[in-house]
Image (cartoon, rainbow over all chains, first blue to last red; front, side, top):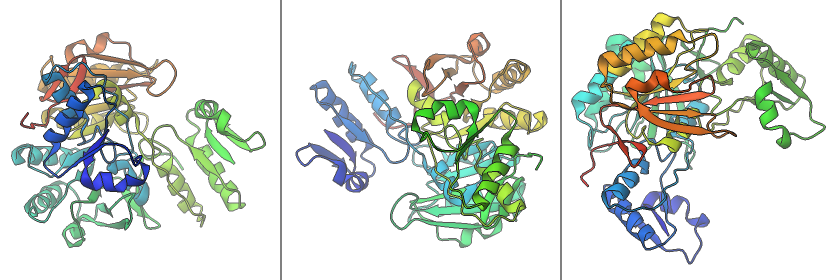
Length: 215
Length: 215
């Protein structure tokens, strides 16, 4: 049985056997999907839970383990790692993450905004490169503006910034710009934003964080 | 032509055609390998530079782009993303990285220790889960002790910690322990350490960072 968010099920439809049982759900239905997966596994089905990117990075790995434990379901869970949006996007932009970096989701659905803000402050002030997941959605514009303001307090406006839409999917588009231009770039829910650190340069159009090799 | 650190060349030897030219180098020979790759590409060879994990995370992606630019080598460079040790290790431990996290290398060969320390302070004080790359080597024991002390200033000693040796390779071993026991675990250069945040629990032996779903 294959369980997953409907958008991801569509993306892998050609890989799913025609006779396989499929449970696809909508955004916000994560708990329902995890419970379905666990209860089907308890009925001795082999269940695949589909995540995009790496299931352990803002994905379904955690909730499946939590639900399995809550329901005292003694079913083996194997987590298959994947390429997460941070490194997929980095590979399209150049090499912005070859030194220390922080990964922060701007979605405050599950995390209080105060905590996200504290993490942005900490990462920006300690010169991490910063990867922003879920930077913006139709109804959620304010977090990106606030993140921009926090980063500008600590970082140069000329810090290179990379924006990748639909990474690894049809319509992929990578843009290299600077922090001061961040709010002028087309950014939505399927966009990953990478903000360089003080050692990040734009080299031949690519974002490269210099590590200090003696060249 | 295949260029890479000798340990990685050995790991993929069976994938390399017997008649392919191979340039393998030792640790510390990164600049030489990048220069070799670029100069061979300029001679119209197709060159593969091998990194382990993801080439954009403490890997060779950056230095290849830097060297190509320095030598004004107009050769196309494609960076192929991979599964980095952070998410590979996370998948073996459970789901410690499903919320915001910071990635920090404890190697001070290229980064001044003061900067590493600042990043550790920032990440620990802002409740990031923390992934430590290069936690320790034979001649470098002090950084891990200092990192331990910094994290204990901000985090509970009971914070779950996962330690994975040789992730994805022969001899892989994953251990879940707590922050206060960190220095009692067998850790070396091929070990990845993941320190949870305040929402990380040990559930059925697995490390899970709870995101706050209403279960």
